[in-house]
Length: 429
Image 1 (cartoon, helix red, strand yellow):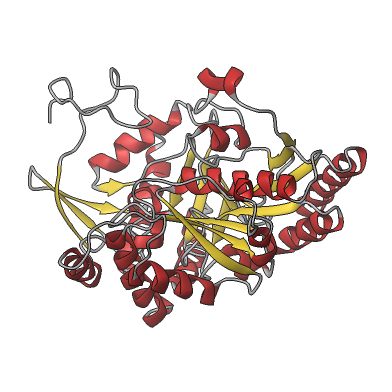
Image 2 (cartoon, helix red, strand yellow):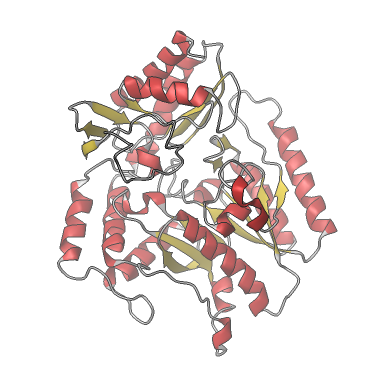
């Protein structure tokens, strides 16, 4: 496909220097079939969304049935069964304190809603001082302005720095297997947070975090024990906790949600990506009853004035209900992958140019030695190598990660590890 003739402007891409895009004709399971007759194994769930694989018939059928009944309706003053059913289903898998579901379109907007909820929560309660947010170093929460502000400054948002609001950041205790310093890193992070909260009493409305795994910054992982300590400190200082589970939700970490895996109860949680099995854009922000009650008032000014044209779109909700059903019927589909990762990861440890081996649920990641960061020179070389061999692996700089659809077979996952080993053997760098 000639990119010079195409009117499509691609995301996260320098269009002038990027290679020609591959034109996909169809998909089935973990495979993508190209227009030129070749096929490629989707090792990253097509940006982490296709949890059941491509062209899942059950979800396609659900969308078809819904399209014949109701395709769209304004969500202010109207509701419908797919939206009501999905909200109730999601709540069955979340901590009991989360009760109210607000629909939006994608991960970034789910985060925007959460930030606005937390900020206005304090205003509605008559507290005027809690106007700042906390976040982790290395965070990524999306590409809208509030989401960019709460994320770390990086190549993603550098051009807009002067437009972003300030956020106080806490060191993230990133860990991996055989990490002998993790307790010290966790203690330093907790100490830093405690000092911030003690020195700035009453300043913060909420802290936003990607629980257990930071995605875009390089699949940085922390322990469930750390998330519990974080929760205790925030509750002690009356600071709301927002979980950005856009990537970690719906089985991705080997449990339905990271908050369940870590035994924690956020006040607000953001969900998207895998929610519809990769079929349609949809997101939800789920709030505690306490947060909701601060908006529930005779005073119209206390309402949450936020919405989108396609809020609670019936087609998206129907797809998500079908996806939820598949997850419920086949929980082993996401629980089994971690064991495969653990077994296959051992085969990579012999390569001296690989380091920081880490696994959390269906996610496995390893670093190639060399310059680090999203713009690492290693990334494009690795990506090109994998693509030429028939694997959709999209390194985050020098970080190679595997994040497969849950339908991916053990044999297919073994193939992924074999091609990573081949890259290490070939000494591409």
